[in-house]
View 1 (cartoon, rainbow, N blue to C red):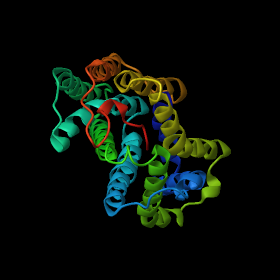
View 2 (view 1 turned 120 degrees about the vertical axis):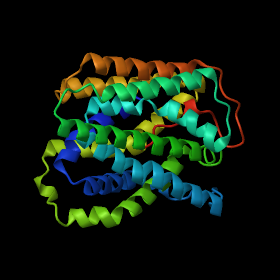
View 3 (view 1 turned 180 degrees about the horizontal axis):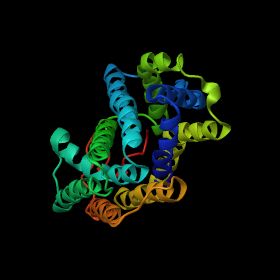
View 4 (view 1 turned 90 degrees about the vertical axis):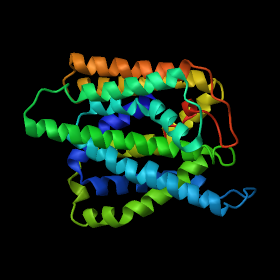
Length: 297
């Protein structure tokens, strides 16, 4: 989760240096090359069913394509600090989505976490005193970041259907290929007008880190850890996401950290702990509880 927070924060200098769609396309391309071993079916693997193909496309469209657009555009208009705090509302968003789409029961803890998430996001809008134009841009950026959270929550909910029959890295590799295909028209359109040679060595290293961390490293670390830690306890560690994003935003990117940022961060962290420390939800045929969602993307 610290890794997830770091690449969310460090995407800000990347989106400032490259057009959004070109950045997303190159990111998916780098990850696709790295994940070739998991993109090819294994000898003993059963063929994908039509339902699985549909779910993989839906996961990629929401969790890769739309998520990347909303997250990168949101970070460009808002701050890395705000992005980390808003992304920390993911467990609450998953809980709400599970109630709406899967009919799962919402506990008092989950309802409280959702309320804390909403209040925290509202506080972020007032965390940066600015003129009306800047405030409007920040509001749009924060709304886009929350849209990214909703996309990721949908991704997690759909992923429950695949988590028991396909390995996490196999699923991640396939949806990354779909993401590359979906982003290709817009990405290639911007790439022909952008000179990649103007990127510094440091930005190329950051781009490779972003690509591999989002699609490969974070998934493997999270799913490996879940083998040894109960899912309801593992959710507590998502607190590391806003903390790492905030630290990088303040220490590396020079962003301002105000009392309102601190209050929003505290509310988001309290919501995560409420979700994670409650009684684990009953496991259905579709997969595990919301707290066990893998940080893919």
